[in-house]
Image (spheres, helix red, strand yellow):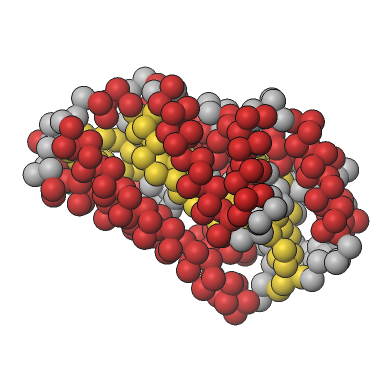
Length: 338
């Protein structure tokens, strides 16, 4: 589910189209990259991205520029990918669930109940990034930077504190995320598969009553207006990728390619800190707006871990390779000292 956002980021995945109009100087850029994202205007994701683009434009003296389409105005991840294929877009901020069908191994960090802390997340990113650089390049992408929605939680219109109550819910799972869908099926749930832009309407109409998002993501996407209860243990980790068209990127001067990489390292590292702080702050805002935390049955976690392991064994080699899973688990094992 999780990848909110990563669609996930998730994931994040909204709306102010007038701000997508390019400034006059963009027409004079020798290399103009048209970039789309589901993240809404005004969010920390778009704010830092615009700072990144401004620095690249300024330091390249306007030779490299970006036209940014936030808020899903170019469609969901699948639509963004199709537009990249025909040259209408040259990059984007993709959620894990959106780009997972293209680079399946990128799904591995979205396994439910995989991580215990952000420290573990960071170690896995550090270990896997060289591999992701390689596999995205094979698909004609430049993996500029990972993006993060953060830890995501079960959010519902009625309290869910036990597995029985979860099984009785009308649960959502993101399109393009076979791992979460199979995990829920192994729990005895038949999830409704929806793209992220369709979730709020489905909550409002009652098609679904249980979703997964980060604290901050639930605010910017307004899901908290319907899902007023949050289970107190994270369901998983949601994330995504900022990608550029590799052929267009390689046409840039070497110094401009390096400029993009250096600016991305600077601003997307700041964005990581921003996102985690925003999630922490968002929990207080949610509580102020009547959202309640629900204590999870202490005995549920062991069963959830067992279902996770069963799911991995069934889907390993299909949704992601055994190679990437083994590499991920080795990093985690080393970080946990065993």
